[in-house]
Length: 151
Image 1: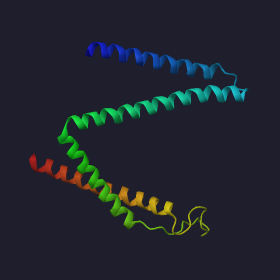
Image 2 (image 1 turned 90 degrees about the horizontal axis):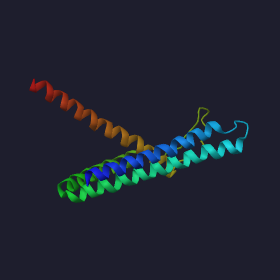
Image 3 (image 1 turned 30 degrees about the vertical axis):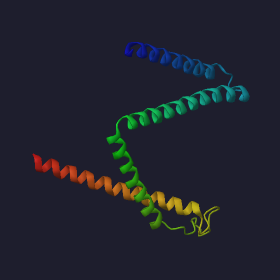
Image 4 (image 1 turned 90 degrees about the vertical axis):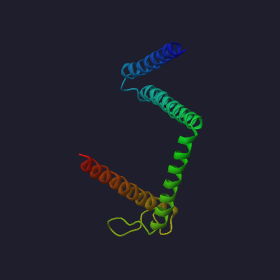
Protein backbone atom coordinates (compact mmCIF):
# COMPACT_ATOMS: atom_id res chain seq x y z
CA UNK A 1 0.00 0.00 0.00
CA UNK A 2 2.76 2.42 0.97
CA UNK A 3 4.69 1.65 -2.22
CA UNK A 4 1.60 2.31 -4.38
CA UNK A 5 0.95 5.58 -2.57
CA UNK A 6 4.56 6.60 -3.20
CA UNK A 7 4.19 5.86 -6.92
CA UNK A 8 0.92 7.80 -7.16
CA UNK A 9 2.48 10.75 -5.32
CA UNK A 10 5.51 10.68 -7.63
CA UNK A 11 3.26 10.69 -10.70
CA UNK A 12 1.22 13.57 -9.25
CA UNK A 13 4.38 15.58 -8.56
CA UNK A 14 5.65 14.92 -12.08
CA UNK A 15 2.35 16.07 -13.61
CA UNK A 16 2.34 19.26 -11.51
CA UNK A 17 5.98 19.93 -12.47
CA UNK A 18 5.22 19.41 -16.17
CA UNK A 19 2.23 21.74 -16.07
CA UNK A 20 4.29 24.35 -14.21
CA UNK A 21 7.17 24.03 -16.68
CA UNK A 22 4.79 24.35 -19.63
CA UNK A 23 3.21 27.50 -18.17
CA UNK A 24 6.64 28.94 -17.36
CA UNK A 25 7.95 28.35 -20.89
CA UNK A 26 4.72 29.81 -22.27
CA UNK A 27 5.56 33.12 -20.59
CA UNK A 28 8.92 33.32 -22.35
CA UNK A 29 7.41 32.36 -25.70
CA UNK A 30 4.89 35.21 -25.51
CA UNK A 31 5.71 38.42 -27.38
CA UNK A 32 6.64 41.04 -24.81
CA UNK A 33 4.96 43.77 -26.89
CA UNK A 34 1.56 42.06 -26.75
CA UNK A 35 0.41 43.12 -23.30
CA UNK A 36 -2.85 41.16 -23.40
CA UNK A 37 -1.16 37.87 -24.37
CA UNK A 38 1.57 38.39 -21.77
CA UNK A 39 -1.03 39.14 -19.11
CA UNK A 40 -2.92 35.99 -20.07
CA UNK A 41 0.16 33.77 -19.90
CA UNK A 42 1.32 35.23 -16.58
CA UNK A 43 -2.23 35.06 -15.23
CA UNK A 44 -2.46 31.36 -16.02
CA UNK A 45 0.66 30.47 -14.03
CA UNK A 46 -0.50 32.68 -11.16
CA UNK A 47 -3.89 30.92 -11.17
CA UNK A 48 -2.19 27.52 -11.25
CA UNK A 49 0.08 28.51 -8.35
CA UNK A 50 -2.91 29.80 -6.38
CA UNK A 51 -4.76 26.52 -6.90
CA UNK A 52 -1.68 24.59 -5.72
CA UNK A 53 -1.41 26.83 -2.67
CA UNK A 54 -5.07 26.26 -1.75
CA UNK A 55 -4.64 22.53 -2.29
CA UNK A 56 -1.55 22.45 -0.06
CA UNK A 57 -3.22 24.48 2.69
CA UNK A 58 -6.36 22.33 2.52
CA UNK A 59 -4.39 19.08 2.63
CA UNK A 60 -2.34 20.37 5.56
CA UNK A 61 -5.43 21.35 7.54
CA UNK A 62 -7.28 18.09 6.81
CA UNK A 63 -4.32 15.88 7.64
CA UNK A 64 -3.58 17.86 10.82
CA UNK A 65 -7.18 17.51 11.98
CA UNK A 66 -7.14 13.78 11.24
CA UNK A 67 -3.95 13.44 13.28
CA UNK A 68 -5.46 15.43 16.15
CA UNK A 69 -8.65 13.40 16.31
CA UNK A 70 -6.73 10.12 16.20
CA UNK A 71 -4.73 11.15 19.28
CA UNK A 72 -6.96 12.68 21.99
CA UNK A 73 -3.97 13.68 24.16
CA UNK A 74 -2.63 15.90 21.40
CA UNK A 75 -6.12 17.31 20.86
CA UNK A 76 -6.27 18.36 24.53
CA UNK A 77 -2.83 19.98 24.32
CA UNK A 78 -3.77 21.79 21.11
CA UNK A 79 -7.04 23.10 22.53
CA UNK A 80 -5.21 24.27 25.66
CA UNK A 81 -2.63 26.07 23.49
CA UNK A 82 -5.38 27.74 21.44
CA UNK A 83 -7.13 28.81 24.66
CA UNK A 84 -3.92 30.39 25.97
CA UNK A 85 -3.42 32.22 22.65
CA UNK A 86 -7.02 33.46 22.83
CA UNK A 87 -6.45 34.80 26.36
CA UNK A 88 -3.32 36.62 25.17
CA UNK A 89 -5.32 38.03 22.23
CA UNK A 90 -8.04 39.35 24.54
CA UNK A 91 -5.35 40.88 26.78
CA UNK A 92 -3.73 42.52 23.73
CA UNK A 93 -7.11 43.81 22.53
CA UNK A 94 -7.69 45.64 25.80
CA UNK A 95 -4.17 47.11 25.75
CA UNK A 96 -4.62 48.50 22.23
CA UNK A 97 -6.07 51.90 21.55
CA UNK A 98 -8.03 53.27 18.63
CA UNK A 99 -6.54 56.75 18.47
CA UNK A 100 -6.37 58.61 15.18
CA UNK A 101 -3.52 57.73 12.81
CA UNK A 102 -1.61 60.84 11.74
CA UNK A 103 0.81 61.40 8.89
CA UNK A 104 4.03 63.42 9.15
CA UNK A 105 2.14 66.72 8.74
CA UNK A 106 -0.21 65.85 11.61
CA UNK A 107 -3.23 65.19 9.36
CA UNK A 108 -5.49 62.23 10.01
CA UNK A 109 -4.96 59.54 7.40
CA UNK A 110 -7.92 58.25 5.38
CA UNK A 111 -9.50 55.37 7.30
CA UNK A 112 -7.41 56.23 10.38
CA UNK A 113 -10.03 58.22 12.25
CA UNK A 114 -10.24 57.91 16.02
CA UNK A 115 -12.40 55.02 17.18
CA UNK A 116 -11.87 53.01 14.01
CA UNK A 117 -12.08 49.23 14.42
CA UNK A 118 -9.12 48.91 12.07
CA UNK A 119 -6.98 51.02 14.41
CA UNK A 120 -8.04 48.86 17.35
CA UNK A 121 -7.11 45.61 15.56
CA UNK A 122 -3.81 46.96 14.29
CA UNK A 123 -2.92 47.94 17.84
CA UNK A 124 -4.06 44.52 19.00
CA UNK A 125 -1.75 42.87 16.47
CA UNK A 126 1.18 44.95 17.67
CA UNK A 127 0.55 44.17 21.34
CA UNK A 128 -0.09 40.50 20.52
CA UNK A 129 3.27 40.29 18.73
CA UNK A 130 5.01 41.99 21.65
CA UNK A 131 3.42 39.62 24.17
CA UNK A 132 4.26 36.50 22.16
CA UNK A 133 7.79 37.79 21.58
CA UNK A 134 8.19 38.34 25.31
CA UNK A 135 6.97 34.82 26.09
CA UNK A 136 9.29 33.36 23.43
CA UNK A 137 12.21 35.34 24.89
CA UNK A 138 11.47 34.04 28.36
CA UNK A 139 11.41 30.44 27.10
CA UNK A 140 14.70 31.08 25.29
CA UNK A 141 16.33 32.41 28.45
CA UNK A 142 14.86 29.52 30.49
CA UNK A 143 16.24 26.97 28.02
CA UNK A 144 19.63 28.72 27.99
CA UNK A 145 19.86 28.75 31.79
CA UNK A 146 18.70 25.13 31.96
CA UNK A 147 21.41 24.15 29.48
CA UNK A 148 24.06 26.01 31.46
CA UNK A 149 23.03 24.33 34.72
CA UNK A 150 23.09 20.86 33.12
CA UNK A 151 26.65 21.19 31.80
